Image 1 (tube, one colour):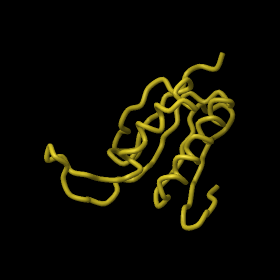
Image 2 (spheres, one colour; image 1 turned 120 degrees about the vertical axis):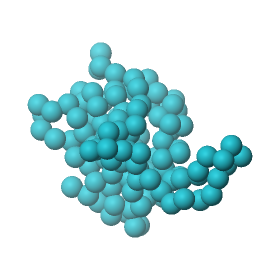
Image 3 (tube, helix red, strand yellow; image 1 turned 60 degrees about the horizontal axis):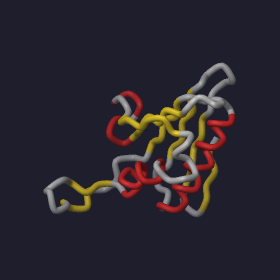
Length: 117
């Protein structure tokens, strides 16, 4: 289920063939590892016809405040929207929203994938 790559454990659950939901846990990964794993997972999920993936980034550590007095949290959590708007996956991603509390809340995202044509 999970592979450890230099301190980064990536857990991937794609479910059965009938389920169109997959999930990936990127906690404890460094930014570049998480980005590579996420893009590969989105490509694989899209190919398999998944329509929704749950990406768990974690909330991250509190690192102070930005110029608008908003808390700065989590490198992975902040980087996710930019990664998903990149040229390699933007044509596969339909929408990104914050997950419900039962699926990770502010430390997770729902990534809706386009239908494969």
